[in-house]
Amino acid sequence: MKNHIFNIEILRAYDIRGTYGKTVFEEDAYALGRSLGSHLAAQGAKRVAVGYDGRISSPILAKSLVQGLIACGLDCIDVGLGPTPYLYFSVLHLKVDAGVMVTGSHNPPQDNGFKIMLKSAPFFGEDIQKLGKIAAAGTWIWPKEPGKLSTDYLMAPYTQGLLAKTHISKPLKIAWDCGNGAAGCVLPKMLSLIPGSHTLLNAEVNGNFPGHLPDPTKKSNISELIETVIQNKLDLGIAFDGDADRVVAVDGQGRMLYGDQLLTLFAMAVLRESPGSTIIGDVKCSDVFFDFVKSEGGKPIMCRTGHSFIKQKIIDTDAVLAGEMSGHYFFKDRYYGFDDGLYAALRLVEFLTQSTTTLAQYLDVLSQTKMTPEIKLHCLDKHKQDVVAFIADELDELEIEYSDLDGVRVPGQGGWWLARASNTESLVVVRAEAGTSDELIDLVEFIYLILNDNISQEYQLDLRPLASHLEFLQAKYSKERP
Image (cartoon, rainbow, N blue to C red):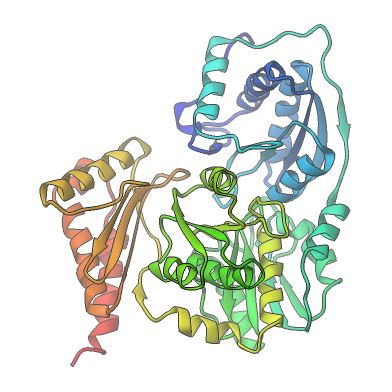
């Protein structure tokens, strides 16, 4: 193989991802290894760590990736099966030059891909596009000797580090849903070492995800967790995505917290220890979060969605905490600054054990505004940016001001609304927040009218989730009206 053309759909904003056997093959993994290896070797790199999640295709792709890397003369350390944050930890622990995680994250079982980390910086955007150009040109290096492959399983020191950097002071009753994902490599041992009564769900690592799909932000995927919490009168429930870099929580009443609500609780804890700190939220976060950080003396910053963008912003601003609506949380006060769902879960438990307030009581306070979840509208990858551009043009014509930091975020009607193209899926994501139910309905109706103006057919945009949510809001809040 002298050159390679990747399917254009798999080179995304901050990772490489597609469908195994359709857009991602072993040949792609090898070519990625050769291209990344050539790029790293030119920068003087010597060693790379490689890990993989529990998907059926992950060890297959990891093997081909390693072959490409060592063909460039790089030494590879196979750290084995585990969560994505375990790979990040391994890069720092082993003091290697870079790391690659083979993972499909929260996506369906047949999807898979690669996340890349340098020892001191994220790897995304133009970096990923450059790998595609190297592969297409075939400008791979051909050293005299290949690199060496070794193995080093670091789950014990990773688990010990999680526990050493948190302080859980009293027992709670908690249900934990691994979702048959990579969290199952860590949780059974970890929970045996912390106080409390712990119920484990879907702990077996199984790439077919027999319990439910590995995206806990969808309420349908955590119905078992919610039922377990309610039936057993537990304090809370915690769920992870397929590679455990994201976490979702439900309170003792079975209510799921939005990602920005959980981030607000983390900000509360961090600002107590580090007053005046910079804290980052992504563009989908509620005004409640940004206003809270400011009111408590912190410095709130709004950032583009995407873990790589946020990691770079943490470096640029020296922030001690960051988070996304999607459930990625980055602690840099006591931890390493990368997104780790397991560590974030422990920090939540620590926060609750140090408080006399329950998670349900906190959620009541955080729910004073009216807001939607992320409403996900299916759209072909080639059209999703066109949809956002269309909305921006409509707003310009109406002379409505908006932020174009990431998609369009539009203030007004007692709140704000957002539309942006997903970086990881074939989706346009919509969200809105307002002070009253009537204002929220007005915002969602406005979004629907803009998108229903001949655009849905032209760009094959599925408006049914938005229409359904509008009907839900109208029915829900009709009871509150005189």
